[in-house]
Image 1 (cartoon, rainbow, N blue to C red):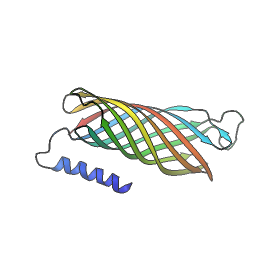
Image 2 (image 1 turned 90 degrees about the vertical axis):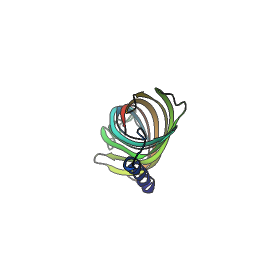
Image 3 (image 1 turned 180 degrees about the vertical axis):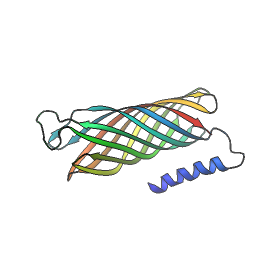
Image 4 (image 1 turned 180 degrees about the horizontal axis):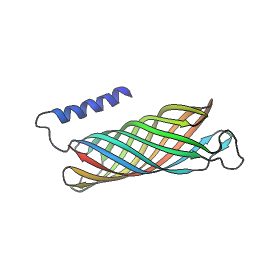
Length: 187
């Protein structure tokens, strides 16, 4: 994973530094949106929680493929459903993702670019006063990018994230659906 991230950063740096590099290959962007998390733990049921997410992205786009480094962070609340479990009730989960995504632009048009995306990265969950763990997981999704000239674009995407973590010596599965929008600046 670290080699993949380092490779993406190297490619982006070379693309920017190369003399006569074509404009519009490398991009940096901001993202914000909502995240709906549904945690599961054997013997405990949690209610779904929706919170605001924020993050950044950097990528390299060539023709109809893009490889991007993506980071986001969100804070969710764990609320148990049914029987109250005092240890887990009303805890905050600081949840973040750092990974690499591949975007395939299905129909590259001059203004609108619908795409599919998939990625792998490290998810971290810190449940206050209980435990913290990080593990690799995957995500899949779809989106659309609206080009505003050659340098700027707006985008909207939905993704499903999945990871299993060891929290307090128990396997916790985190399913997370994100709906985000953002602004990219191409160089």
